[in-house]
Length: 165
Ligand SMILES: C[S@@+](CC[C@H](N)C(=O)[O-])C[C@H]1O[C@@H](n2cnc3c(N)ncnc32)[C@H](O)[C@@H]1O
Image (cartoon, rainbow, N blue to C red; front, side, top):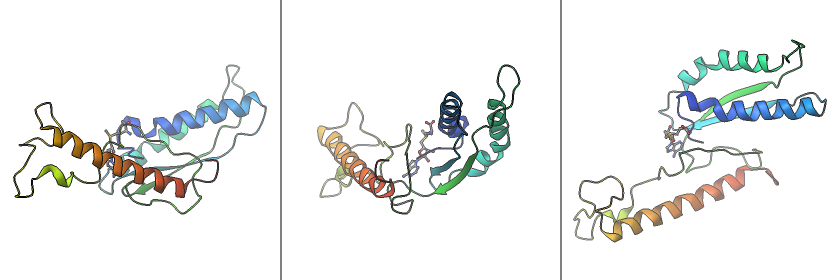
């Protein structure tokens, strides 16, 4: 969730594919297929990620070769994009096994309402985040907005996860 379009976008998928590959090899089993859904806001540059997919798949194929150059079947990884906000529903019920997010969940769904006094005076001066110089009410407002957003995030994902996911 919040994959962005830089080099970090595919790292979690790589880690998961590699872990599945290693586990299957250890147990002498056929590796399972992995389906990944990359999520970010609709304005995210998903095309840049898509353009890096051939080299991702190439690297995955190489994982199947061992030190003696023997071929082992590598994990098949199917990658799709799901544009939209993680502050809303993104998947059908009981659909996902695992959800991962790095450095994204602190993006709030909105600026807290309490940043402006009842008479319309801005309380956080020109800051767009709780700063050292912000009055205590501003910190409380951001904390409450985060608690609201994160609670909703967990509720939404719990609906999308399979039981035991
Ligand atoms: C700092 S980047 C993190 C990128 C990557 N996950 C990493 O660890 O480097 C945060 C990403 O979260 C995305 N984001 C922010 N709010 C979001 C939301 N409500 N739904 C989905 N993605 C969101 C941003 O568009 C941005 O790409």
